[in-house]
Length: 395
Ligand code: PLP
Image (tube, rainbow, N blue to C red; front, side):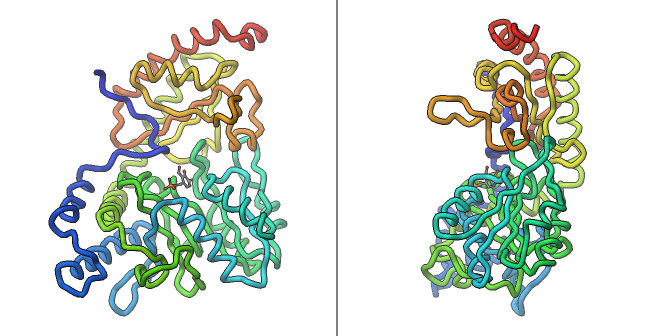
C-alpha cells in the first residue's frame, strides 16, 4: 500500500515519537496514582508538575506558586471540555452579568455550549465576520457591554486558519469589566502565545492538535480569576477538575509543548513555505479557484481552497484513492451537503463553499508530498467539472 499523504492535521496529528518515548514508562512501570500516599504513586505527581510547567512555558504563563508550581494550568480531557469549563466558570465569576459575546465561526465546543446556555437564560451574541473571516473591532466594542460576563473568541480558525487580534479583543473585554477567553486549540504550537502580555483570562488547548495524544487538554485560568469547576470530584488539579489524572497523556502533552516551543520559530517558516507552494501550484494549474481566509494573518499550516462548481466531497473521495487525506469545508447534515457554518458566515458564494477543501500541514509533510498533490489535483478537478451542471452552465 502507498504511504499516506496526511494533510488533515487540523483534525488531528501524529504523536511525535519523542512524545511517545516520554510517555512509555508511565504505562507499565510507573503506573501509580499520583494522589497515593506511597512513593511509587506519589512520585508521579512531580512528573505532572513538570508537564504543567512545560505547558505554561509554551503559553507564556509565568506565574509559579511558592512551590514552583504553574497553578494557572488545569489539565482537562480535551479542548471541548476546556471551552465548556471556561464559559461556565466566567458566568460563575460574574454572577451579576448575563451575557456572553462570541463569534459565528467558533468551533462547536463553544457554539453548542452557548446554545445550551441560551436555553438556560443566558444572552449570547454571535459576532459576524467579513468575507475574509475577520471581525470588525468596532462591532465587538458595541457588543460587549456592562452586562457581558465574557468575550470568547478563537485564536485561529480551524477551517481557514484566520487569526483574530487577541490582545485587542482582550483589551475590549477588560474595558467593559468582562473576562476574556480564547480557544487556542488550533493556534498552540503554530503561532507564538503569551497569555501574560496578551491579557488572556482563560485559554483552551488540546493535546492531539500538537503531536500529543488524544484525550488530554488544558484550560489556562489567570491567577486571581474566580473559578468554579465543571467536573466535581476528588482533589485533583487543586479541586478544579475532579477525576484521576490521565497521566500518560499529560506527560505526553508536556513533552509536546516543550518540543513545539523549541521548534516554533523555524517550523512555522517551513510550514508557511510548504503551504504557499501548494496554493501557488494549485492556482497556476487550475482555473476558478480561490484561497479563503485572512491571507496576511493566518496559521502557517492551513490552506482553505475553493474549487468552484464542484462538490468538495467528490474531490476528497478521489484524493483518498491516491491516499491523500484532506477534509472538506462542508458538514453533512440530514443527507444534504451544507457548507460549513464558517464558510456561510464568510458569505462565500454557494458554488465556492461547496467545493472547499482544507489542507492542513504538519512538520512531517515534505516538499515531494506537496508536489504530488499539486500534480494530482488538476485531472481530478477536470474530471469532476466535466460532469458538473454548474460548470457547464457557467461556460
Ligand atoms: N476548538 C477548535 C478550534 C478545534 O479545532 C477543536 C477540534 O477540532 C476543538 C476546539 C475541540 O478539541 P477536542 O477535539 O480536543 O475536543
